[in-house]
Amino acid sequence: MMKITQEDINKEVWKACDTFRGSIDPSVYKDYVLTMLFVKYLSDVHDDKFDTYLTKYNGDSERAKRAMQHERFVVPTNSHFKYLFEHRNELNIGEIIDVALEDLVEANRDKLYSEDGAGIFQNINFNSSVLGDTKDKNVRLKNLLLDFNSDKLDLRPSHLEGTDIIGGAYMFLIENFASDAGKKAGEFFTPKEVSTLIAKLTKSKPGSRICDPTCGSASLLIKAGEEVGSDNFSLYGQEANGSTWALAVMNMFLHGFDNATIRWGDTIRNPKLKEGDALMKFDTVVANPPFSLDKWGKVEDKEEGKTTISWDPETDQYNRFWRGVPPKSKGDWAFISHMIETTYEGRGKVGVVVPHGVLFRGSSEGKIRQKTIEENILEAVIGLPANLFFGTGIPAAILIFNKGKVDNTNVLFIDASKQYDSAKNQNKLNGDHIKHIVETYRNFNEGKLPSGIAEDKYSYVATFDEILENDFNLNIPRYVDTFEEEAEVDIAAVQVEINKLEDELKAVQAEMKKYLEELEIPETPKGA
Image 1 (cartoon, one colour):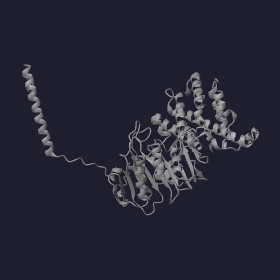
Image 2 (tube, rainbow, N blue to C red; image 1 turned 135 degrees about the horizontal axis):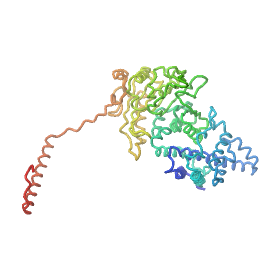
Image 3 (tube, one colour; image 1 turned 180 degrees about the vertical axis):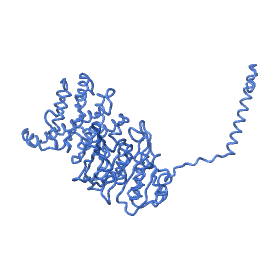
Image 4 (tube, one colour; image 1 turned 45 degrees about the vertical axis):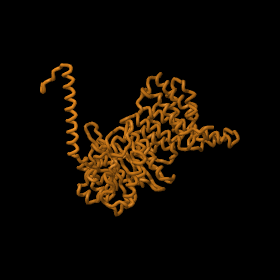
């Protein structure tokens, strides 16, 4: 039997999206397709395991069923994909799928419920009018089930070419949904090249705790884990959007990271990754937080003319904003402060994507920035090309903070803004671009780069005194000189060219005069 490849599955799952294209926004229908992929995967794994037990117990189905109760997931009969497919023509198929998801969550409470009692499917409704009126909705759901019933979407592990194919298909879908969803995509996906770059820059050692406090669908967090090079690490994340949190949880299971902890909630106002009453600490914290988030801070509840403040960063119980409170209209440094405060002292690393304003804006942001530099935890500032991210064309930067810098008080600046491949909808980093950035950073990290120009028009190692002289402004052009001198003009050569053109013009004018005389057409007087 031919094994099913990554390419086969990617092609089929993308084809399944035709059911919704043109009538429903990709940022909406992605949840339905990804949820169905998850259900189909659990169902096919269940069947594969059941067949294995039947063989083991010589066809004794009762023993096989008992053994299945101890498997990774329990799949109730009415939650199985086959059951849904058999009922595809029912007028209430949307309701049948919703009940199937509820029962699947109930049968696996320890995995599919959050610690707050929220099931991962509570934000998706297959019976919703979002899918159209009853007739259109039923047609779409029937077609979705027909698509996933394809032989080429047999997701039983024994039929697949590799163990990571399902996770690969899930990431393939998320990336393509992001490409189609435009501006809304930035809420749930970090481009894989950027995720790879951050994962390599913050490369975690075996045994590390790794966290993404704004994890979206968890693509960056998974990349950071995979970069460790062994299975000896633990993943933690938090996501504010309920639907996206569900995507992250499913993503973890499809990649085999069953022990990952992904919490649902606002990281700034309600951080949930805690040990006792204290924030949990990590070896590595990575994130692509929302750029310059407005109204991130103080929460004022108004009722019957009275105002009650339910949360205020000034009195944050975890003291995350001791360096200063960022402006209420720009939450960038709020996320950075949280990330820094949740890394281990003496060894913790932070890799965060930021808009360039973070590097030079003044007021409270300037004071916070100054303190991180004076603490000697800022290690690198890396400028990226424009139009890399979904939803925004503005260029961004990556900041690397390292609590293990020790005696090196210098900061590395890299201007990688000109190194990219142009693509249809957005620019991309290729392997060589990523390698160039990572090798430059590692050379600096290992003490191989002295202060001054490291690579002309690309990288510069700034001393603390230089940054102080610039009033702690980290704007990259202050350090990396990318000015290109214009080529010298050869005046003599230009004059020769002008004389040549004038001679040619005179010849053409004489020729024109000759033709006009032959045709007996008077010349037009100059200035007429």
